[in-house]
Image 1 (cartoon, chains in turn yellow, brown, green, blue):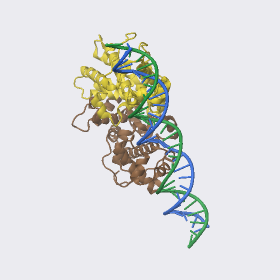
Image 2 (cartoon, chains in turn green, cyan, purple, brown):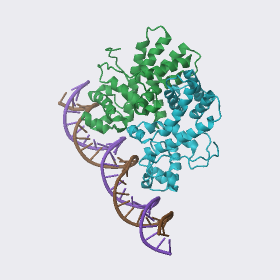
Image 3 (cartoon, rainbow over the protein chains, first blue to last red):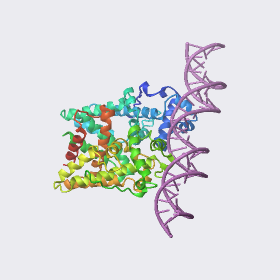
Image 4 (cartoon, rainbow over the protein chains, first blue to last red):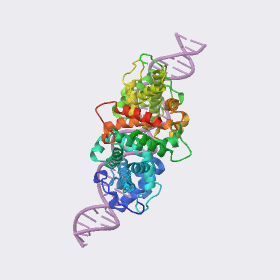
Length: 222
Length: 222
DNA sequence: GCAAATATAATAGTATTACTATCATATATG
DNA sequence: CATATATGATAGTAATACTATTATATTTGC
């Protein structure tokens, strides 16, 4: 995976003007990732981003209708990347249990090293997804956006891991629920560990969330 | 529980002026529940609430600093109610497995009938919690609010069910994670079933979320 | 029964957000 | 070199999330 420099393409419904088609577009994407990480999605505005990249906010609006559309774009980018990682980590692995284990690892651990060939900082992007991704589909406009295909990349990842589960136990009835419980639960628990430790079981070892969900899933599909 | 008409008291840190101390306060609480259900938390404003109850928004600000403080109050009210329900459902039940089962049922099913003795519509409130509760602690101010005790009621519920799990299996390492995975997962899956069915496993039976998590938890603690 | 305290109403005002619109200028393309 | 396209500079608007002020009720304490 590293240094492979894959190119991620995002479907045209997710932007007004393709940010991957100009330098300003690249600046918008890379700096928005930095800024959202810095001040959080709520405080993030196109005005502040414009000041950071020294362009008027009106220019940013040419690429994205609003900051929510930008977050949807970033999320889609992330899940497309995760799918590449899943494919890469599981090809040529014979045992489906082993493939599931590796997939769970990818879904439960934030990205730690950037491939450094793209204008997208994958480490920072992964952090954003862990803390902000809930806000992508918790809006009044979910249904409209869902029809537009905004969540396709996420759905594909869920489907892929669900298929893996069914390969191990074809009779298991709730593969999708199990996978989304894993993904969303991981994000949630990481947040709790940082802010509301009484709601989780924090230990010194960092991998405890990953461990918890790996065990949970294998017990569930048995 | 029904017709018991318990009185729920909320700690003074959660409001500027106690809404349970005046008629206007009661109107603010009951109508905010209706309005948030109608238009969603994002679109909800004190101005609109003021128009609904025919009072100026400045009067509402005397009770709550902002709409987030109001949501925190409502959430705290809900979890205090849930704790009463948990206690009520499990007293005099000898088997800890049976008590856990009943507790899971309470946590995974929305409230269906109001006790009708309070100015709080519990059915509507339960709906709000299922769809909006994430927004209560996903803010920049979590840490401050956590110190103020805004999430005490939720934590108490989690602790109570965690203790039940430890009663069944004292060696289980992640009781809190399991309980919050259950609670938050339930809310999430219900949302997915309504808006993003590809992320869940929808069937005709309504109880499938409750079934899924009940089985999951008992398998996990074995 | 009346003064004092308190609660609410009525109104106005401010900074920020989330945009939209217009026009000028720079750059690329054919 | 003319034209198209992208960006910059600037202005403006409606809504949101408040704060402040003053007036008018209502309660309460004596």
